[in-house]
Amino acid sequence: MDIFLSGGDVAIIALVLFAIIVLFAGIKQVPQGYNWTVERFGRYTRTLQPGLNLIVPFFDRIGAKLNRMEQVLDVPSQEIITRDNATCTVDGVAFYQVLDAARAAYEVSNLQSAILNITMTNIRTVMGSMDLDSLLSNRDEINARLLHVVDAATEAWGVKITRVEIKDINPPADLVASMARQMKAEREKRAQILEAEGLRQSAILKAEGEKQAQVLQAEGRREAAFRDAEARERLAEAEAKATSLVSEAVSNGDVQALNYFIADKYTQALGQFAHSPNQKILMLPVEASALIGSLGGIAELARSAFSGDDGARGAPSDGSPRRRGAVPPVGG
Image (cartoon, rainbow, N blue to C red; front, top):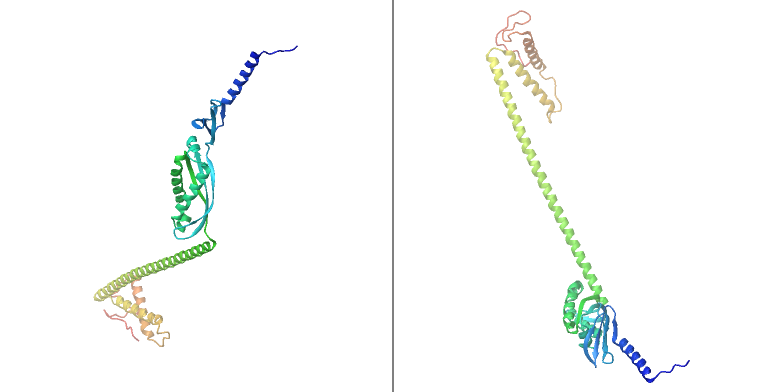
């Protein structure tokens, strides 16, 4: 069966197809993390956010598709001259994020190239104002200064510079060798200083120890002298007391005490001959009869003490009378 369409039916079908095409042309799906700009007759009108958006077909068109995620930009190597005329090769990396899609699209041409060039220019400016030693030891300060300068310069483009990092700083080979020699000399100097300090401290401690030892020895000698003096004083007191007792006994008629005292002194004198460093040979005969007589007096005194006799009027064993106050002979 043949189907014949009238002119009105064809027009309706064409109109429906045109409406579908227009509808699909006006629907725009923006991915997450992107912003699209809309231009009407070549003029910016608005920015499309992530998700489904509608535009006017045939009048509006998509201008720029900008990535709003944080992006990394490699800074190529370049040579710089420091303040002390040292040449170094440096490179780095920059991180940035688009905050305003319209300004990033229409305030600057070729956004990445502009960021790259302004970063390289400021690297030469900042690092060229520093000495080589500061350049090698103050990476954090360099990064902070670069971030501040580059972020302020790119603010008008709707871009936020999040980080600027210097990756490598490469001085010339001869300069590196010179720095190595300088570092070695500094370390040797510190080692010598530490060794000298150690020797000095050791000498001080040794002197302090010797001083303390001398003080202790002096205190020991003083204590020994004090005790020797005390011993001599007590010996003198004992001698004086013994002499006083002997004198008192003699005055009371007790001659045996005098015999004992003389015999004790005599035997002590003989003992000192043996201990004398200059007398090693004792020539005999010594007055042995005097020593025997002294020992006899000591024995007589002991017998008197144990027998309970008076000691002053004791009778001799042969019965003969004995004179009061008679002293037995000490010498031969």
